[in-house]
Image (cartoon, rainbow over the protein chains, first blue to last red):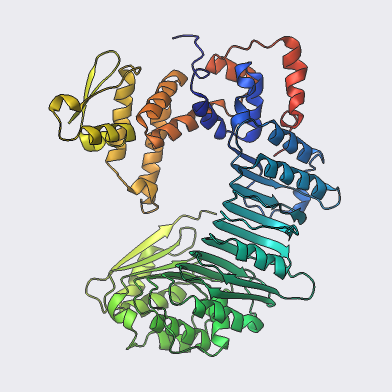
Length: 432
Length: 164
């Protein structure tokens, strides 16, 4: 067996799966190994070119100069492929100046010509790039970051598209409607940081018969999101990117939340959404009859009466809530909860049916638990009021100064309503 | 109990539930269900006895923590432990990996197949063509001119470091 080349005798599809684990350039470099290896890489079903780690906060002065011909190189690679290309992802520094839009267009046309692309991800890492999207008939997943998007005049729709992600995209409202409306198999929509085109506010109307998952980050006050009809929507995640108040858009946010109420079983809301919710008159009678899991981002340090009211309203309207995750923000270095808030929270609440009957698991996570009090007030609230609670998880970052014993000591005095309640304190490691 | 017989005639007895991790074996058992005991013997040809041993070790390790693997529900500690164990398991010579890939391919064990392919990719990663040739014993029969000029110029950018 010594000295025998055994990799080359593996079936082609096995060699291709080995190559798929390599970076594209390393896979292409195997073409010099031997005559038979010269073309193995051309059967790669998926190409990921560029850097995909999320380094949006990176200092732009660190950008390495990239030869302007790189896109022609990619073009050559794609045209050399002999097998079907199913997945294509490109993350690079586009610059609007050097005519790269035209080159990108011819690259997209080439992909269209190959005819079988299922996943397309384009990410400009610096300047927004102009993309004119041809009608890929087999496209199932589309992700675009930082671009001006234009649909062709004869756009026929992506009839297989199931997942659409648009982030920091500038697109006309008409094109956006056309894109969403023609994608009649859409199950996942993730959007955020839309850039208005001209003076018109961005308007997103989701009228989708198959939509199952919705994630939206509202960034500017002149952005209107409306879920017109989505009978199969189960998960909704609504947040605010910039962490600022935006009172003007309160009503549109509310429309989003309440129109999703009937079918959603898992809901994520962040603090700013709660804040803006409370500015509008709360629809006191509406309920979320199917929500079993709620994820909240709370800023308990700056929580005021209106946010508190929204919080209680949410608990009241979620009739069969079983699991609650609360992530506490501590952006403002406020160590203590407002005295009034503490009093309100540490009171016994009656008539909230999820607290009485269904809520079994609560997790309170904090980014910065140096101020024990902020988090602990909420822990006490649930221990006191959730009558069928089984598990209360408190997690915090290990690099904060808090010791589990401090939390335990603080909780010894707490009143617990449920006989089955178990409190677990988990230090988690910072993953960022 | 199921009996696997390798190409060098060694027998391996495995619990059905464990062997079920191979989709091929699962299908075969399903087809032969209710038949005689002799039908619960499966010949694993073109695989020498070293490999079924390794495959069964892999099965047993994964059998001990079923389902959880795919889910995030597995605790952090457990996941770390399994990761360490897999790293050790796959830390072997390229010939064995080759056999494991072939076995995983024919027995249809997706996680083993992916793990072994990944390990081979890791071995080849960040190495020069000469090194890769040496490790994998791929014979380079290109002429000097082809090697120096023609092939690198086909995709010039992969040889300059234009892509980070």
